[in-house]
Image (cartoon, rainbow, N blue to C red; front, side, top):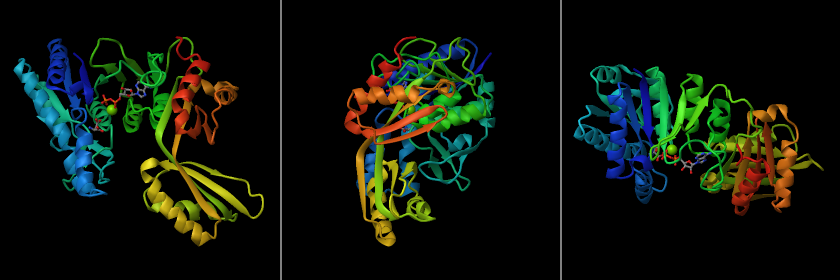
Length: 405
Ligand code: ADP
Ligand code: ASP
Ligand code: MG
């Protein structure tokens, strides 16, 4: 007998018919003798609807009340799925995050899980029940409802799998695994049989939203075997593991991209010690996360300083930069919120030169201007105008022969 945690995303439980189909799948697994814990997302579109409702009332919704609101989507699904299971003769019980003590910090809207108490879940499993838990939500030490950030149900599933020492955590979604890039952008993209935690973490943090970053991080930390599968068709999916034991390690595992980028440049700032902190300090104080940072070499006594942020933070960051610019006596502030980031990811890069040059020449052939570059051991990221995104991803996918296995 195995203990399996399964997570079903929004599209997988998007209608009553889908919920019934998922219930059958779960029952089959339980009837085969396995203990099954199920984590579900809100029905597709529901979380977006709730977010819009909040914004219609408050432009910047109160974080605590926002969590009370958006966490309700998952509560609908746990109830409906448990009913569907019982309807077909499968004992089941639904729980919200707080009922199974998914304890988080108090960072509303992006809370981190601190502890999961598996006792209640275990007790139900011992009675042969399927346990259905609401994803994306938790509770802080004062009993306030918290949420884990968009895509957070993945993280709930991994945290439960870790707490229960599950044999596998299965993420059921609308694609049959992790692909070399988003198959919606490149139809020729290829499913990967395996990918390492390290690579998946890079892919997720560089924009591949097939798994939430935190879920991959937790799975890596607690060594939870993680598999991405389709809830619509049978298949092996993609296993995310410590080592990739395939015979030949690919140079590049995948291409990730992020459409939510914006950049700001402060031109002609005095080049002196402390300047980076004077520019970025107020941005950090406003809780705005900075991604890439580039400072030019000073030609005279001034320099230009550029950084990228999430597009949602653009207006706020621009306001801050204008104040900073006046305070520092800089020449001007310029910005662009129509940029994207495209990244190549692969552990094979460690031992191979020439990947960057192939990347740059491919983009040059397509007439794509690179605005910023950043590299690490296992990734190369470039920033470009958003109109080039699809072209760039397709050209790189083919230049690195990613469609071939
Ligand atoms: P769910 O609602 O099940 O959590 P998501 O929409 O969060 O599903 O994630 C699945 C989607 O992720 C796919 O439909 C696909 O478009 C997108 N995606 C982005 N990058 C990749 C990738 N490299 N491999 C597979 N899917 C990807
Ligand atoms: N329902 C939440 C969202 O749409 C959490 C999730 O689906 O993982 O982001
Ligand atoms: Mg998701």
